[in-house]
Image (cartoon, rainbow, N blue to C red; front, side):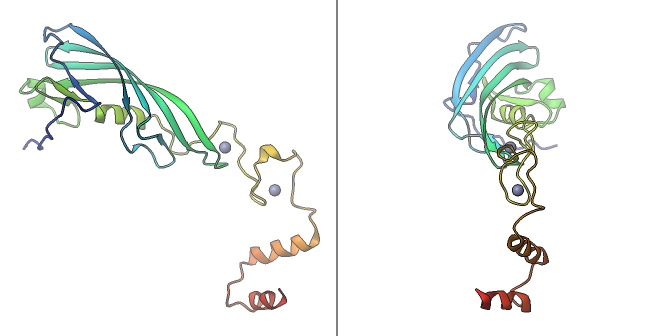
Length: 201
Ligand SMILES: [Zn+2]
Ligand SMILES: [Zn+2]
């Protein structure tokens, strides 16, 4: 299987780690604590890590025979929109990350697929994909501002939290009831009813 072309890593990139100072003797460890600006598009459509916001890496690097094992936590903030009430969601996250990066020309590199085990480039590790996986996999596809968010009244669009428990649209002013009946029928611009209403306005 041909190797996919690797982009050349730049050690100055915030999510690129230089392991030069980590002895390659298995068992050697080094802490990696770093606060970096979050990359773009880190998240899902409805909830994501704001680009440029603080992403805190609290990791340890451990030499193993085939490469470097990176484990620890990634923390940061999320912003999004509640899928039920559209209120803004602003919360923090703390996810764990554990990933092996294989040395170039190691048996692991030769016997695994790049999707299964990360690759090192010399002494450099690109953490972006691992961070992306760790964060995105924990995000809800339907984020809510809180688990028991009741959402909006389907009739008037007001947050149900802000309405009395007996809120209902059954006994409304008859004029509004008439409007609701009309909108339920969804007259089109071409329908006689719509034309008639337009004239009456
Ligand atoms: Zn909500
Ligand atoms: Zn209502």
